Image (cartoon, one colour):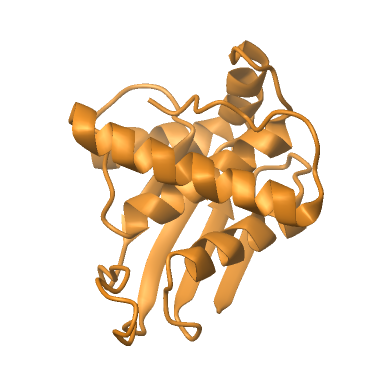
Length: 165
């Protein structure tokens, strides 16, 4: 799995954890091991510009996903996953920090960035949360991936509650 993490935000983030959880999420979703993903960490100003340009919404947001080859997890266990470019995930640590502090189960900026990385991966794979049933599926999968990764890493304490809307 080729995953690049590029921190352009000026904020120190746990890039290794972002890389690890992205790799875990993609493996859990059975994405081809030769697929490629880019994660870019930007400041609030850059995120706001992207949010306006692509979503026509004001202010910075927490995560944005830009799919390339529209890869999807294989439907069957014996099906060979396709290989390709997943796309880009853009994260904003300033928004992540505030969301982590405001969450019902307060958590760190880095924990929020890990959650947002999984959220971004799922968006790249075609998951959405516009409708209640879609939201339940996506957020359930997101929680299972984050919990699985945390357990594998031996991290204790509650997993971050979803703060992504």
